[in-house]
Image (cartoon, rainbow, N blue to C red; front, top):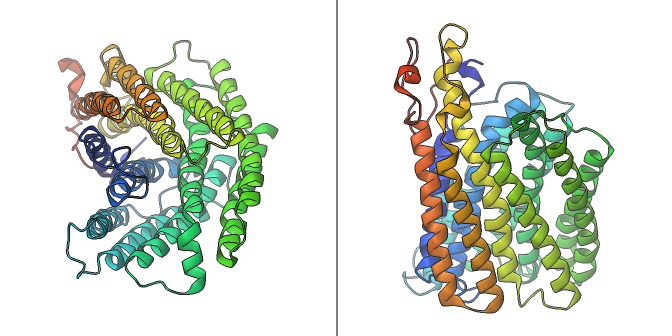
Length: 450
C-alpha cells in the first residue's frame, strides 16, 4: 500500500465537485432555475449542468481515477493527465454557463461561448476517456466490475457528443438536417445516456466492488451480476444507437424507450438483488456509516424507479419529469456519492499518510479518521430534505421547495466540513496523528511516490 496506488488529483476533483454541489443547492434555495423557471429555461440549464457536469461527473471522474486501478489491479495510465482534464472541464463549464446567460439575454450575443464550451468540455472528457481507457486496455480481458466502467465510459462519450450537438445548435453552428433532428428530439437520449449510462451504470459496477470491500462481503461474479451487465448494456445500446437513428430520421422514440425501459427495469431489479445479497453476506458485524447511507441511496433508486413506472402507466411522465430527475440526481446519485465520498476521503488519506509506515509504528485505523455519530446527523438531514423537496415538486409547492433546498445546503455543507476535518486529521488523537515518517496530507492532492 505505497503511494503509487494513489491518484494524485482525485481530491482536487472531489473538492471541485463539492463546491459545485453547494453552488447548485444555493441556486435552488434562491429560486434560480427549476421549479421557479421552466425545465428548458436557460437558468434551469445552468442549474442542471452545475449538478450533472460540475458535481456528479467530476465526482465520478475523481473516483474512477482512484479505483479503476484497484478494479484492474494495475497502475493508472497517467497521473498527470487528470489535472489538465480538470482545468478544461472547469473552463468548459464556465463557457457553457456564459452561453446559457447569452440565451437568457444577460450577456451580449457576440462571443462564441457555445463553440468554446464544445471544444473545452470535449477536450477535457477526451483526456478523461484516454486516461481511463488506456488503464482498462492494459488489463484486458476485463473483469466484470471493470466492464461496467467501460460501458459507462462509452455512455459519457455519447452524452458529451449529444451535448456538443446541442451547444453548437444553440450557437448557430449545427444546421445540418440530421443534427437538427437530434437537437429537436434528442434531449431524452442525452439525459438517459448521462444519468442512466455514465452515472448510474458506472456506479452499479463500482459499487459492487466498493460495497464488498468496505463491508467485507464476498465479491459477486455470478449469473445475476452478469445479467445485470448484459441487460444494462442492451438497454443503453438501444437508447444510444437505435434512439439516435430514430431521431435522425424523424421516427418515433416511444418504441425505443419502451424496449430500453423494460431492459433497464430488469437491470435495476437484478442490481437490487445483488446489493441485498452483499449486505446479508457481509463479514463486518457493524455496518459503517458509508454503507448504511449507501443503502438509503439504493432505497431512493428503488423509489424513483417505482414512481417512474406509475407515472408512465398513467401518462404523467412529462408532468413530473422534473421531480423524477431531481430524485435521481439528489436521492440516488448524490446520496450514494456523498456516502462513498465520506469513506473514500478517509481511505485515501489513511493510505497516503499511514500506509508507508504501516507495520513500522503504531498507526490509527481508517475509522479513527472520522467521527460517525457526528456525521450521521448531516446525512439524515440531507436525505430528509431531499425527500421533502421531492414532495414539494410533486405537489407544486415551489416556495416550500426552496426551504427544503436550504436544508439540503446546510446538510451538504456539514458533510463537506467533515471531509475537510478528515483530510486534516483533526479527528485523530494527538498521540497517533503524525508518527515518525509521516507528514500532513495536502488538502487538494495526494503525494504520490514517483
